[in-house]
Image 1 (cartoon, protein in one colour):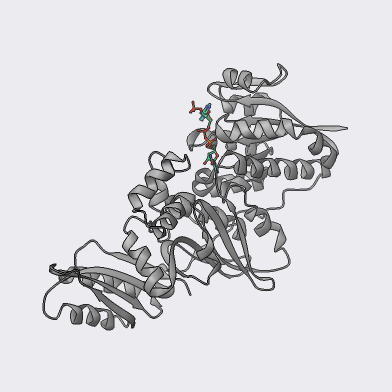
Image 2 (cartoon, helix red, strand yellow; image 1 turned 135 degrees about the vertical axis):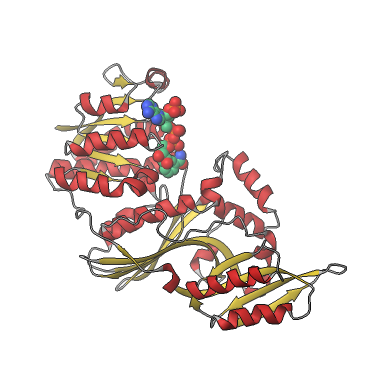
Length: 432
Ligand SMILES: NC(=O)c1ccc[n+]([C@@H]2O[C@H](COP(=O)([O-])OP(=O)(O)OC[C@H]3O[C@@H](n4cnc5c(N)ncnc54)[C@H](OP(=O)(O)O)[C@@H]3O)[C@@H](O)[C@H]2O)c1
């Protein structure tokens, strides 16, 4: 029986669980693969201690430098779960440059080094798999890559960040955003520094990975609009539910057009009003979901735990299994080489919008705000004013009919420059 040797770089939360599962499920994997999957090397700054803690046999080589493991271990398949950017990039370069097989769960590496990784893989015939990089244990990438091979993916709308979804859904239950974040941190699934999550940056990196997988092209981080949930308050969440029949979710979206050879994409991450009847509105707490729209199969939703050692290690191990099967079967790497991806101008994308403003009690203020929207041809669907007794300002909630983002954004900036409203406001798009 053949053997596929596996080397794991990074023995943290995901690496330890991957190694544990790989060893625990050894017999089943062997039976299904028709070959032995054997761990032959691990790399970590504290490789000795980690190997001892996991009870690894002496036959498993220990490295403190991942790049040295890539050069010297001679493994058939490498797993990168180091986290960060520079060391994984060197490690990936080493493996892919030699035509090796790499499994990674590192969305940041994939989002920022996509052209370099895919070019190296295309040149050398290397294999690259990254199911764990998006939505943890939910098998969205394999579905996008294989299950719609005879179909056309038109777009995706995803809740790809568990921390922000936890905060938004706890706000629906009456908690403040600050208290919800603290709770998520205490439960261990929000980072101590939640900036990347709350700002939408984490979801944006995952969106780059999804766009790359579907089109082969590089959706460059920073090239499309990304807004986080910083300006969303429990007041917005309550208004949305009670008055507009909608839930607030941080939604990452892609719409594909063009051709396979010259793909085009519309991309964005933003807090979004999702009608309560929409499947994404049912996604609560730390769960992730991806709604995929296809030409023939219609809409499909993938749902599950988007992070954590168990779900991510499950995805990593699935990649290890499938990659090992391809190596054994002598299959060439399936992904097309890098492509040029053109971006639809974000200003041309269209949706309805929600705008909450704290408006000072000045004659004609509401008329000036409505007039500013009108001058940009943004038509108001509804307007609502809430004034607490004894105050000199009112919360004004405006929803609009579909308008281009460019026009809405211009109107929003002009409204803020009028001086009638406080700079602290909340703007969200409305999902149709
Ligand atoms: N945790 C999740 O839920 C999750 C979900 C999806 C994807 N991921 C991805 O999976 C990857 C791993 O995440 P994790 O949570 O397992 O991280 P982690 O707990 O921080 O583990 C990373 C391990 O790699 C070691 N390491 C990092 N750089 C190294 C270097 N240059 N040389 C030697 N050792 C090095 C770290 O050692 P030190 O601690 O000494 O730095 C640590 O032991 C990340 O890319 C992450 O984005 C994680």
